[in-house]
Amino acid sequence: MSTTIPGPDGRPRCRWCAAAPEFFDYHDREWGFPVVDDIRLFEKLCLESFQSGLSWRTILNKRENFRAAFAGFDFRKVARFTDTDVTRLLADAGIVRHRGKIEAVINNARCACDLVETEGSLAAFIWRFEPQDEDVPPQSRSTSPASVALSKELRKRGWKFVGPTTVYAFMQAMGLVNDHAEGCIMRDKAAQARADLHRPS
Image 1 (cartoon, one colour):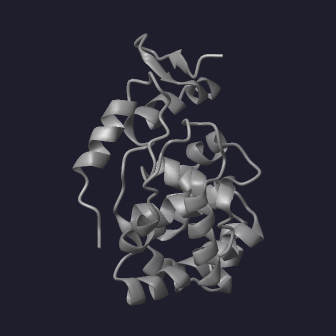
Image 2 (tube, rainbow, N blue to C red; image 1 turned 90 degrees about the horizontal axis):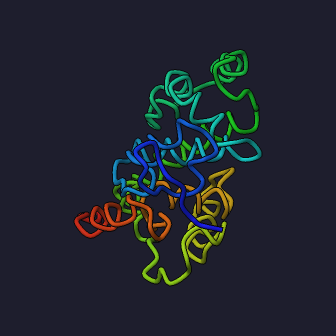
């Protein structure tokens, strides 16, 4: 089976885009392009944790609702959330109302604040786990040694809902690996963006 499908313009995209029409725009504009902004990195880790057991389409369609509910995923603000906020979020039909995942976001926001204090930024910490060896064919795995290592370190620091599969999906989306399929028109563009990136330190 081919790893690509024709996009709306007839040019090849990663096959997973076929799952929903809105995936093409997300794929072309975001997925696999490197991110070093702390807020966006924190947001994606949170959204990937919410996605666990659900479809990414569900989360993507609710993303603006999540942003409104969680103060734009500014982890310094979310870290100050209280039980009152948990009650508010559990009543918010615009998001996924899962108490464990909601409480994990608040917990992880506090952990993010601690991590920034010790490491300088989320980006500096996360990009240390960028794998140097990408010889495994794209889209053939759900975890990697790097995602296992990052997951382990986050959990050691108190983070929740950040298992290796969740973390690998995060690494794919945030450009720490280039998992655009061979032949996808975005693969070379993502590779160039990664080549041009100034890694945080």
